[in-house]
Structures are given as structure tokens and as C-alpha cells.
Image 1 (cartoon, rainbow, N blue to C red):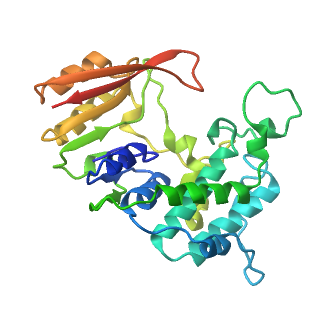
Image 2 (cartoon, rainbow, N blue to C red):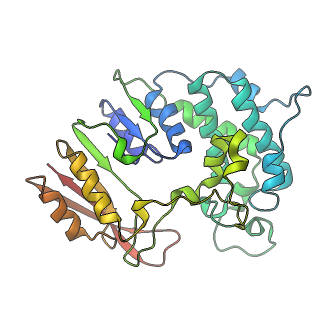
Length: 309
């Protein structure tokens, strides 16, 4: 069981190892990845499917929500037109749920590739358009047309689909509603640093989350924010006062399984706190660390992997 499945890389690795995998993520756009690459065992996007997604239909009046709401924030005007149209085509003209998930995966990866920092946390389109000497970023990638990115990521998605002859599943529930009884439970929750500041993935990728529910997106937008994020939701994983209890509860929930926690050594709770917590339920706790430098951080911390059994 992969409780905070995210990009699906851990679930996919276990699937490759022949394990029966349950992928979970509370964010819909992440669950979409799990559906297409973990649960799906045989369906690919064909050339005709890609043509269907990219076709401009003269008989369709395409919606303009992205054009109207996000003008000048993330993408150029013509790119926003493409996004409105492509999102609509996937929803209305691709009917197989696995094909939809693969098309959305390619769409989301295309959006990420064309974003400075690969995030949607700031209204910073100017970083793409400024005529300056650049010390970072990849302007050629940013300026590559959406359609070209999309076709490349379709190829990557198709190549990642395979059958390991197990009943794998992708679910979209809160961490505390995940099924119990797995042999191994992998926990990679949002990170909260020692100053109590967390990584809010919903805010980082709100644009992709909105695209998953395109027709109701307008009602979910925080229009007071400069980057038109989704209306914020409180998470116990992002609050210093509640995160320790959150860890306690999730470990207790899966006390019958091998528990593997991925975290950082400079966070809340601390490494020692996590080890102490795990030893309440498990006889043995092994620890592996690896130094890691993050793009938006000026300091080097250590990735932490705790294995309790």
C-alpha cells in the first residue's frame, strides 16, 4: 500500500517487482497517474486517440475558462486556448477511463514541463517572456509547443504500461481511510520543516487539480489570490500542532504491516521522534539516510528512510 502515492514512482517500482500494489492519493490529478500507470495493465493510447485529443472541431463551441481565468499568469494566450480545447476533448471524446488517464497524464506533464520551477505556486509568466541572460531554467523547453510535449509524454506513458499479473488498484481517499492488511505500507507524507513550514502539494499543483474537474473548477477558485489557486483546505499534515498525532494515527492504523516512512531528517517530527513512535509497534527499526539538495532550498538536508518490522 502506497498511502501518499504522488507521482507513482514507488508504486510503479513495486509493480515492476511483481507485487500487488494499492496506490492511493487524495489529489485527483495524482490518482489519475495511479489509474493510468498502476491499475491499468494493458491499455495504450493509439495514434487515432492522440489525433482525437488534438483535433480542432469546427462544430464544437469550446469553453474558455482557462483563457478567461488564467490570462497572463502561467501560459501565453494561444497556449491557454490549446489547454481549454484539449481538456475538453479528453473529457468528451475519449471514453475509455484508462485512455483518459493516460491522455491527462501527458497533458499534466506537458504543463509542468513548460512551467518555471515546474510549479504553479506563483503568477510568474514573466520569467518565460523576459529578455534576459538566464542562469537557470530551460527556455527551449518552455517554448516548445504543447502539442509536441504532449506527443512525447504519450509515448512515455505508453511505455510505462505493463501487466505484472497482479490485481493492482488506484484509489482516491484520505490517508486515514486507506485499507489495512497490506504486507508493506509505504508512507511519504507532506514534509513539515523544523520552522513549521510545510510543502502544500495541492497549492503547488492546483492548476492540474482544477483540470481534473474542469466543469466545476470555477466554483473552487480562490479569486483573491494572485495565482488563482484553489480555495485552501486545512491539512493536519501541514500543522506543527497536529502532524505528530497524524503520524501516530497512521502508524497505529497499519500496525500489522511492515511500515516504511520516507521523510527528511530536519523536519517535524524529528528522526528520533519517528523512531520512538515506530518502536511502540515494531521490534526492529532500520534507518537509511542520503544527502539531498532541493531546487527551492538553500540548504542540504538528508532524505530519511525508516523501515519498521
